[in-house]
Every structure is written in structure tokens, then in C-alpha cells.
Length: 427
Ligand code: ADP
Image (tube, rainbow, N blue to C red; front, top):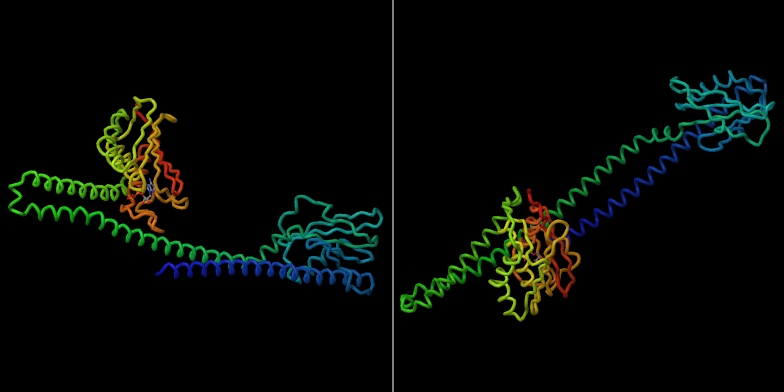
């Protein structure tokens, strides 16, 4: 699948998802309003009927059309303007509420003209469970009208309406699950795509890395096949050395790949011991890196404080870590490489920072450079070959030692990689 198709699929699914969520939200809001209206209609009918029967019992045949008022969705008043018998009221309320399928607890109170106060009538349990524990007369505010009226309060109106919405909530849950599965599927597609790209890059890089030494070995062995070479021992030694070096190079490359493949499963086992940093570093620099950097018009400056600094680490892996960082500092530099190495004690461990003046790393890639097989190849930033394994290995080794690695970089100016190795010495 091409990048364009994947992006289109992704954007379309995102749009559909947003649309579905918005639609569902509005449907639920509408359904909630509808439930509220249905409840209001049923309550109004029930209360009108109650009023009708009370007035009828008093031989009063006034209209009941507009005597029910909704103060808020949980509070209704019924302006009877006539005598109200509490016992009759409660039995009528129970009967008419049930007739209207209003299956919810309610409280009622009656306005007492004599004391000009609301008199609490009682709590009616829809399912006849225990009585309400607290009674709040404040739930029954008085109306301006001073004639007889009664009021109904539904304390559990919100949970009742929510219960009535169960089907809607269930459908939303199903939709949400569907969207989560969709998101997961998109995530898998992206991951697979990235993996296949990484694999392709890796194969390309590996082919290149192996092809060059193989070609050199082939040419050198062709020369060695010439019977006359025996008369020129210097040339013979020269070509034999080339073959030897290239074979060593190939062996190292294979070892690196194998090392990384193995480390994924079991980690790398360390053999930690204490050694002095300065001699080891100077030996590495003098043997390999200084000549290389100086041949390109650059230099390596080292600052170790204190000079007799000790490291407690696996010496072999530690050397590999430093080599990888120095290799990169030189590889990813297009001008005269100027490398600064700062070493100091820090937080019960040592910190080593390798700073270069190379091509730098774009901000958006800084967190990716430690990923296995990751290489910055986009935008033709560089054409240096590699496996994208070096920094992953460095991070792994630092972590294995209980330490870490950090990078700071500015595109076009250079990078600084700092490793920290704690002095986790067993005493
Ligand atoms: P490799 O060098 O084999 O590609 P690494 O894991 O060592 O693999 O590095 C990963 C990527 O990080 C490199 O491809 C390169 O783009 C970038 N990188 C690493 N070190 C530096 C550096 N010092 N300066 C600029 N870019 C770097």
C-alpha cells in the first residue's frame, strides 16, 4: 500500500470517527430531552387526574387544564384552591402515577394556609422499600399563590432519566468499542508499514556494507592468484593484509548484527570490573580515531576531570559504546571533524559527553535515533551507510549498566551524546 493510500484511509477514518462521535453525542442529547418531555407529559396528566378527583370529591367541577405548574424538572405544584385531604391525596397520587407508568419515588407536601407553610406529606416508594432517610422541606419552595395547593418532588429524577437511557448508553458503548478496534487496526497498519520500510532499509544497508569488503577481497585474491606475485613479497603481504582486514571488518559487522538480534530476547550479559578511563580512551584515540580525524583536518580534544577517573563497567562493551559514538561523530560530519570529549563524576557515576560539529539531527528525529534500524535517510540528509543499530546498542548497554544516554543536537551545527554509567559497585 502506498503512503498516499494509507494517509487517505487514515484521514477518512479519522473524519468518520469524529462525525460518528458528534452524531452520537447529539442523538444522546436529543434522546435525553425526549425522555424529559415524556416524563413531564406523564406527570402532568397524572397530576391533572389527581386534581380532578380531589375537586370532584369536593363537588367542585372547575377546569384542571392549567393548574399544574412545573417549577423545575423535579418539582411540580398543583393549584387546587380547595380543601385537600392528605390520605385521599396520597392514594390518588400512587394510583395515577402508576397509571401513567411513572415508576419513581416521590415526596409530596401540602400548603397549609393557616400557618402559611408547606407541610411535609410523606415519601412514596415506588417499590415499597424503606423510607427516605432525610426529609428536606427546602425541596418544596412555596409559590406566590396563597390558596391551597400541593407539591410533588422527585428526588431521583436524574438517575431515573439516566436509567431510561440505558439502551442509548449501551449503543454508545458498542460504538466506542468499534472505534477503538478501528483505531487499533489503523495503528497496526502503520506499524506494519514502518516495519516493512525498516526491513527494506536494513537489507539495502546490509547489502552495501557487505558488498564493499567482498569486492575488495575479490580483487585482492585475484591479484594473489597471479603466479608472479611470489616474486614480490611486499605486494603479497600488502594484499594478504587487505584480505585479513576486510575479513575482520566483515566478521565485526556480522557480530554486530548477531549481537543485536540476541540482545532483543535475553539482554546482554555484562562482566563489570573497575578500570581507569584515561588510558583506555587515549589508547583508542591514538590507535584509530585521532589519525582518522586529523587526516580530515580535524582533532579530538579530551577533558577528563579528575584525570585518574575510574569506571565500573564491562570494558569490552564500554569500548564499543565509545567507538560507536566516535564513529558517528566522524561519519556524520561533512567538514573538518572537531570532537570534544568531556568526562566527569556525576550522581555517583560517570558522565561522558561526546560533542561533534557534524550535520546534526532534526528535532523530530531526536527521540527515534535510538530505535533499532532507525536511520535518518529522508531528505537526502546524508548518504553514509549503516545499519541503524549503533545507537540502539549504545542505549541498551547504558541501560544494562543501570545508566542512560541523552542527545542534544542542532541541525547543521552538531550533536552531543552524553552517557551516564552509575558506579553500582557491589561492596
Ligand atoms: P548508523 O550510523 O549505522 O546508521 P546509528 O544507530 O549509529 O546507526 O545511528 C542512527 C542514525 O542517527 C544515523 O543514521 C544518523 O542519521 C543519526 N546519527 C547518529 N549519530 C549522529 C551524529 N553524531 N550526528 C548526526 N547524526 C547522527
